[in-house]
Length: 180
Image (cartoon, rainbow, N blue to C red; front, side, top):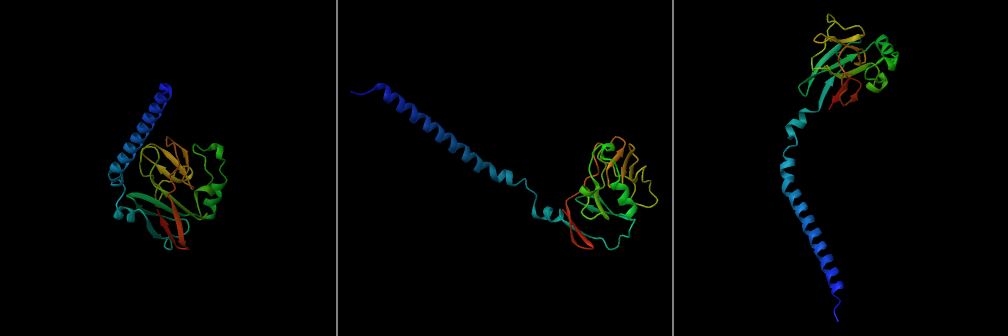
């Protein structure tokens, strides 16, 4: 005698298995079909080559700055004096809008490397030239909306919500860095 209940359960189990297998294969097939489109959105080799650049530091005297271009943005390279380093390290972090220790923003205390774009509306702050206004904290000043940055690139006053961004960089040797 055939047990109808047992056959019904086997049919349900088989149907569930077929649905699961079909759905899995459809998802896998879709992923393989979409992958070339997603992969085409990655930057090309020539763009990636531009994303990493080397810069010579030997011609930047202590107390002066240099502006270089990286990924279409200005990057401020500042050879800081002992006084600037001390001022940056003595700041009470509770006074900062975007608290960051100076030690966390630099690899070598004498070299500060930041993207020179104000975090408020993307202006370029003044302070790279000796004749530029450096703001109240001896760093950079954004004249468009009045943001002041200190000698560590941290926002101290004005509408800017974040510090000047520190790009990914490494020292290749004593006088050369690689950004990107």
